[in-house]
Length: 222
Image (cartoon, rainbow, N blue to C red):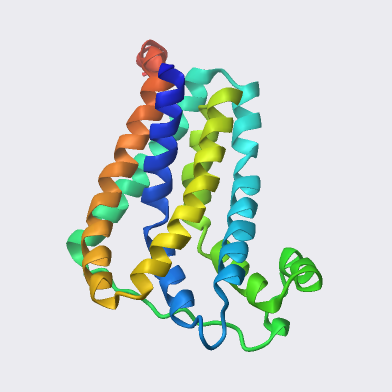
């Protein structure tokens, strides 16, 4: 039962922390719903893009199966470093929301995955998927250590939580796109919380993997 609760908590907190920017982008897509983008195309494109991000992050899980768990836990330092970097950036600059530049024609994308999508789906779908993938670099950097520190059961729960939250994220973005006055507040305060969530996630990975057991090893090395 504890494993289930831990996995759900890790999945929810990690998804929320790594997708604050994404919800703003989704709002921009939904705001163009009557002109260029249909809601169903946005939702499907978001799912395709996010599944691709999960697939790219899965090698972390298989690497975790080969290495001792305590050593895998060292990857928990990555979310901590990213969280500290984001916190430092918040202190130096104000968060700015950038307008998403959408391609005017399919020919501007040359990624193999996007080329395959053009043959299977409506252009609006792969446009959304392409933006989701392009915006997923930080997601992958966080998901790899999380997956590496998980067993098969925890990984399955986390992925299920992620996929469920994609749908919720799309609904929230659609709702917020009809209430633009809320966007500045979400952007301002959401980014302030993210660094602390990432640092907490890193600490969770270190503790869950029992990485503290490596302290005598490092003391001997010094």
